[in-house]
Amino acid sequence: MEGTVQNGMMTYDLTAQLGTKEFLPGLQTDTWGYNGDFLGPTLMLRKGDQVMLRVTNDIGFTTTTHWHGMHVPAIMDGGPHQRIEPGETWTASFEVLNRAATYWYHPHPHAMLTQGVIFDPEGTGYQVYQGLAGMMIVEDDTSDTLPLPRSYGLDDIPIILQDRRFNVDGSLLHFPSDFNPATDPALRKGGNFLVNGVEAPILDVGAQVIRLRILNASNARVYNLGFSDNRTFYQVVSDGGFLAAPVAMSRLIMAPAERAEILLDLGLDEGQTVTLRSFNGGNGSTFVPRPLQDAWDTSDFDLLEIQVGSPTNDAVLTLPGNLASVVRITESESVNVESPRLFELNANPFGINGKRMDMSIIDQRIRLGDTEVWEITNPNTQAHPFHVHGDSFQILTRDGAPPPEHELGWKDVVLVRPNETVRIIKRFHDYADPVNPYMFHCHILEHEDVGMMGQFVVEDSQTTTIEEEPDSAKAALDVKTYPNPFNNTTTILFTLLESSHIRLTVYDALGRKVEQVVDGRYGIGTHSVNFNAESLPAGLYVYRFDLPNGRSLTGKLVHID
Image 1 (cartoon, helix red, strand yellow):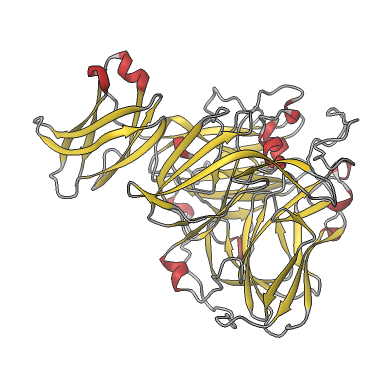
Image 2 (image 1 turned 180 degrees about the vertical axis):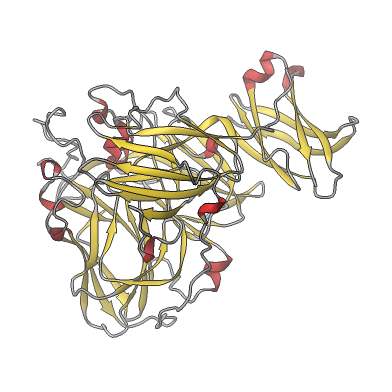
C-alpha cells in the first residue's frame, strides 16, 4: 500500500474492522483485519519521508496500533497509552528515521490485570489472534543500490507466519472449553499454520534468486526454519537493517515478532519444488519446557510449497557480496558499562524485576543523549523474546560470548533462552518525553498481557515548559516539541481534543513575527509540523497557538548553533 501525499505528508489510512474468512473448507470464520477480513496491507515507506497514519477503530472494542520497530516519538508509538476507542480515529505522524528493513504493525492495548485477562477482547493477544497485523517495508538509499530482488510479490515475497486452531464450526479457538488458567499453558498456539493468512499455500516463482521477508507474527510459537532439502540460504536483513554481508545458514530460529530477510537461490531448480519447513523436531526443551509444549513444539511441519518455473525477464541470478556498513556500538560509548541496567524476566507470576505491568508507574527513566547497556536475565525454563520500543539495539553478548554472525546487526527483539543472560546496547538520542512512555516486554503476547511488561521514559533536562495559559486552552490543546533546544529544525506536535481552526505563529525574542507555520482547520488527534530555523540566528523564539474564542497557548523554542 503506497501512501498518498496530503499536505506534504505521505498519508496512509487503516481501518481495524470485523470480517469473515474461509480457513477450513466450507466454513466461515469470524475475523478481524485492517482494511479487510484478515491481516492488513503492507505499508511502503521511505526513510526521510514525513508520514501520517490514520487508524479508525471499527471492531467494537478499544484498541491501539503499534508501529513495531519504528523509530518514533513515544506519543506516536501506538502503545497501550495511545488508545483508540470504538468509532474513533487516531492519527500518528512522524519522520521515517529507520534503516531499510521489514517492520510491522499490530494492536498493543493493555487490559486490566485480572484472572481472566487472557480472555479479554481488549488484550493484545486476543486482538492479534483475531487477525490484526500487517507488514511495513522501509526503503532507503542503501537498499536502492543493492542488487537484490525488489519486485514485490514476484521475487520479493512477504511471509507472515502464524499458527491458529479452530473449533469444529470453523470459529477461532483461543482456548479449549475446559481450559484452566491455573494449570494449563496460557498460550495461543495451534496446529493450523498460516502464511499470509492461508494454510498450506503454494508460491510460484522463477528459477532465480528470490527474497523472502519473514515475520513471525504468531502469539507464542518459535519456528526453526529451513528447507525440505536442507539447502543453504542467506540472511541479509535482521529486525532493523541490513547485515554487513549475507550470512549462510540452513536453519534459522525465529521467535515471536522477529523479522528476517533471506535470499534463496533457485537458479538451478526450474521445474522443481522446495518446501519451507519448521524443523521443531530437534528443539527438545530448548525453548519450551515439557509441561508447556504442544505437539508442534517438538515436531517438524511444512509451511509453504515453492514451485519453481522459468526465470523472469529481470531476474537476479547472483548473490551479493557485501551489503551495508554496520557500525558496532562499542561498550565504551555507554554511560553504564560497569553497572548495566538490569532486567530479570519472572514467571509465576509473570513480570519483570519482580513487578507486573502498571500503566500508572514509570519503571525506568533514561537521559536523552545517553547510550546504555541493558542486561536481560532469564532464570526460567521457557525462552522469552524481549522487545524494546523506540528504536533498534545491538546484541553485545550471550552469556558473555559474542552473538552469532546473523545477530551482529540491528535488532528490536532478542530471544533470551532459559537460564541465559543477554547484554544489549541501545542509543537514546532523538526523542524525549517525560510523560509518554515506551514499553519493554516479552513478546509472547499472553505473557505481555498478564504483566510481563514495563515502561520507560526518555527525559531531557532542558525540555521546554509551556507557559501558564487559560485552562480552557490547555484542555483543548496539548503541545510537545522535539528536539528542543535544536540546531536547524524542530518538530511541533499538537493534539486536539476537538476539531478546530488553528493558527500557529513563531515570534523572535523581541516579539517580531518570524513565520506563520499553520493556519487552517485540523481534526481530532495528533498533528506534526516542522519549524526550520536554519536561516535564523541562534536564540530564544516563542511559538503561539491561537484557537477560537480568544484562547491561546504559548511556549519557548531554543535555537542553538
